[in-house]
Length: 240
View 1 (cartoon, rainbow, N blue to C red):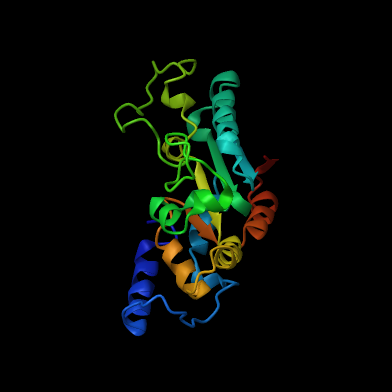
View 2 (cartoon, rainbow, N blue to C red):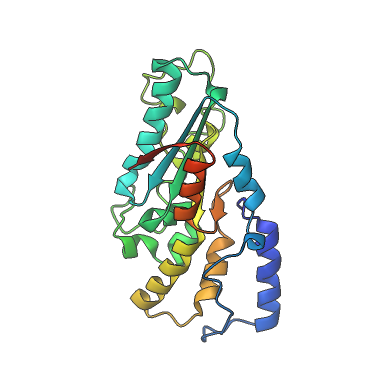
């Protein structure tokens, strides 16, 4: 489902299930993959981001969910650059580097429901007021048709796609989101302790990776990715 390809993880997951047989809920032993090597993820896709040839390259280092406030800051920067400073859209590249608790925003409703992410992170669904069992920050409220941006789209219209601060809405405007594999490994182990789960950590990690949101790139280590994006990619750095 993501740039850390569904093909690669689907094939690995299929092989894993075949080897394990029918999953019974009992603890299964798997080789730990806490530290990824270069050949284990889509390094080439990350290097493409490093080599982007555009005027403005901005990196948002996001660790806290903040009820989506950090995503709104990406939207505000996009609008400020495009309309306030007149920078052409095709000359803007923005990346949201999500790690810490915010890392879980990169995973779909299956993950949020199965692993009770909302209850764990104390995030309520604004539609129900109850602990979220779906990812409340990814999906746009706008249809594909309504999300089309034209020359006549008014950025001051609060219902405009230019004011859409969902991850999907930002992706439609070219924002790339990164997820941290190291953070996921650590979070899964915390999740197991929190809910007293019996599954092997690597089983859950693979399960979650198979449900990464579309177009999200899972990097080996976010703190390392940030260093490279700043030093080699020349991305300006914003921590939110």
